[in-house]
Structure formats: structure tokens, C-alpha cells
Image 1 (cartoon, one colour):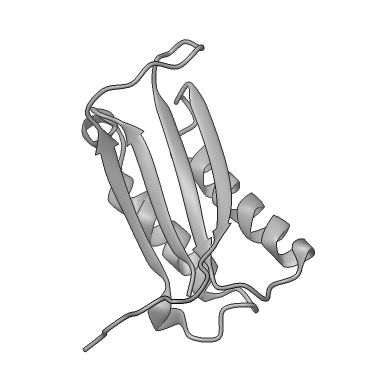
Image 2 (cartoon, one colour):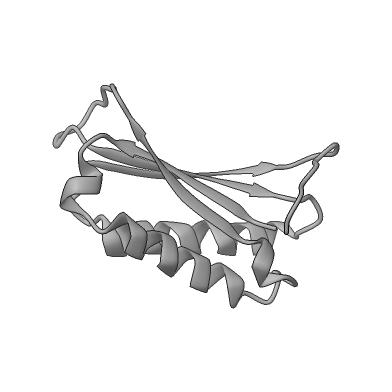
Length: 113
């Protein structure tokens, strides 16, 4: 059940193929041994309408990984690195790239068709 949300500078959707980034992340996570049900992997991007960072260029992408608790620290670090590698591959010229992991503690509710 990893959910990967990428907040990014407005305008990156014009200059970068964010769908390709989402597809790449989905494939990497779906293939990971810690993911037992690939159909539960979610990737998405959200453009920030305003922002300021301390580097040039003034662009950023920040990935938040929501994970159900139970993975080892080693696996968590591996998933974070997979995410950073994908960001670097697709957004090499972006000023700031960051990744954060958050455990999704109960109650977590979902509905899928």
C-alpha cells in the first residue's frame, strides 16, 4: 500500500513529463518485494500555487510516502532511495528534491472497485 504524493513547483507539469515519473514510481514500487499487492500502489502529483526555497533555481519536488507500519528500517530506507532515484532521473534540473516517509496508522479506510 505505498501511496506516493509528489508536491511540486507550479509549472513543472509544463516542462517535465510528470506522468512518466508517476508511471516509473508505480512500476518500481509494484515490483518491490515488500509490496504484496501492486494494485494498492498509488502515485500522484500536486502543483503548489506558491512557494519559496533557499536555492536556485526556485523549483522543488517533495515526495511523501505513506506506508502501513511494519516494514523494517532497511526496507523503509530502500523505498525512500527508490523514490529519490526516480525524482533525480526525471527532475534532474529541479532546484530541490526531498523525500519523507510517514506511517499510515489506523484507522485507514479505503474503498476500491
